[in-house]
Image (tube, rainbow, N blue to C red):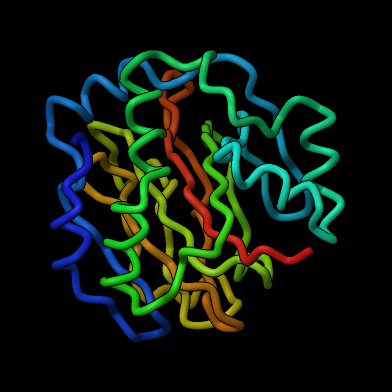
Length: 226
């Protein structure tokens, strides 16, 4: 197995300013280096609006959960499917990335997150997406969609300077200045966020060199709402 499930199980869930956790060493250094080197380059789309902008890749879900997402009242799933952005096919990924995604789809991964968070995730649909942030990008303060239960963010930068921005900022409230903790997007760290009405977080504006990209994988669990 690539993922160290024990690192999830033994991580203490923080309760201030809401429920979240900083998980260390989920992947070995060797595996992380290989994943960083083969992080997808193609088929990223710019998502931008007032206060945010970043590039996102295809959204991956298990075949058995695809139909429930498409039956959801959220029209965006059907739109993403029509655009080829939502898929259960991993053929476009390198071998090591296919391995990682398949492990993130396992019951063992869900059970480790359940043990850490106290949440029940077995009936949730999983959506995995690649994120690439470049200089000038940001993500405004937000709490995530109301039907999202938990988000797990994995980072794939081997080095990152605090001066470059791009931190995941845990916020005390909806204001970008109300920082509780800034987390560098370094590969030895990942962060789990339990969605609530006050689970405010953001990505601080990036000022990194144009040669650098903030690389992240977002794993999200959604309630199956028909």
